[in-house]
Length: 524
Image 1 (spheres, rainbow, N blue to C red):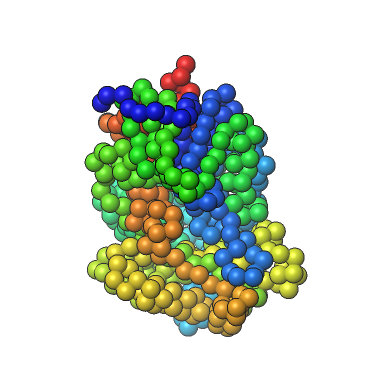
Image 2: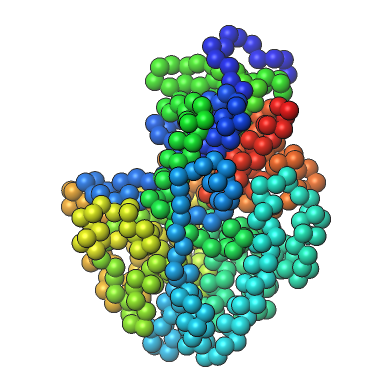
């Protein structure tokens, strides 16, 4: 391709397209290394899906509107960039309410080994499931400790990662066989099986036995974070992270411009031009490197390349503000513990299989699976003082098996129908309807909002509403892998630094870090 033509008013070492957290990580690293950096963001604010907002009119509550928990963010990124950001652990891992023999009960994981063991025994009648749980997560913990550090290292080959894990059983279970096989071999109780499987389905539309192993890849990323698999609460909301990243980037000299949408990238492999537009009109900037913090589909649109297969998200995201936490039918558990961790709803193993089959057939699940957690129990700072004093709380719900295809016709009606069915599944385990606990905004409307994949596609340009931009990748190089850092594209000086990069997905900053490392190596 010939060199880009035309006059360019500005030149930078690197132009970053997209101001989500990965783009900000890349901007901060490159600027701290002394490179000139321009970041262009289409919206009038930075942060992408990692933002905190006040979604309810006249209500002083800052919710992590889209992404909401932190696990995959390496501490080294926080430390190396000097971020003023911290997280807090959740005291409870999860609570799953069920009805057995007509009696409300449930499985509580957390609060200490003794309480967890007793909860397993109370639900299942013996210690067998708990001991199997310990062995299984002992195995995943070993894998996490071996794999997590590699995310910010040059991309290993498959053989190298296998040698590093050094556990053939773990390799077979997680990397070669459908996860459903291991779940069914190791656990007998339907509820326990379901709790294990849910980590394989967050943002991933798959069955336990999907031969593509999409569920395995999703599970892997959900259990390796921090080398422990723990999911922590961002203090101040998720927007606190992107605010800290923006501050670090600006302090290092990066230029961040909002309200500027990139519309075209032209490159000859050595120099690139990025055309962008905003309220002031269209402009062009040149750079040695361009880093795209957007989806592979958007990358193809900008460069004029053949786009990848369309992505499809599969979740319902619901944000709520309550005047109080609802009482549970299972009186053995305090709601303040049950909602502090992940509260599983209709996520038994067979329920998950049924919901997937119904959605795959084009119908809304009759018992939609979902999970909830209460940010304000761990971090009350997201609430205004008056709300906190009166006992208000936030609830974040993430629904599974809700693919975008279900909403292409009669979108608003189907969204409302799915929300109603989802809340009905929750109400079945409550001693009072959730609706009685919902706060109201300044205009008297209930403080609840729901977002389908199509809503996320419209609001954030997530392709098909896919929260990972596309299916998650294995954390190793395929035969035709995208370069030494997993961020290379068909153009030598255009890199993918968003969630669709190898080892992307979730709030991690890993693709941003790795793209910055690739640029700095190329400039040596």
